[in-house]
Length: 200
Image (cartoon, rainbow, N blue to C red; front, side):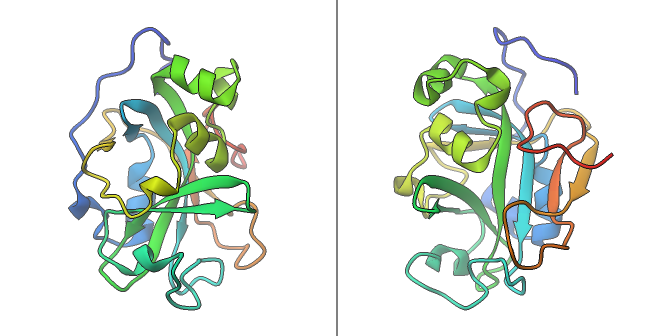
């Protein structure tokens, strides 16, 4: 993927509809790499995600529905937002058929739209560090618990398919203590906007 100018956001691909998410979480996750995520017009290119399946001990849904994870058990194409370590919001996209309770965690994006707003929200100028982690990107995009259960194809959220081919790297997930060996982290190989580089 070619370097971009901060002054000219890249063109957007076709809008992704909720039906896009009604597939295996392991198909959706790599297909999201290179797509653009916007919240009220602010956001950028998804460069890193992690897949979580309901059979996976690291998934919030593994032990069944709770008030917090209820949206994961509903139909695909909705946002699941939760507080991590009591500090940061994290945003996930619910996938697979209703009841599957599988989701993709959005880990990092390359800022392309509304960069000035993101810098103000994060009190940070470094473009590469603005959204290089799940808590960083939610702060930059203004995502809170108010976005939990919102559809992914209606305002304020907009998702656009990638418009360029990308080399998708895979690796083990980050910051978990269960099922640590599963290679369910996906990202753009060589991106400078990742939360952590992939092994070469």
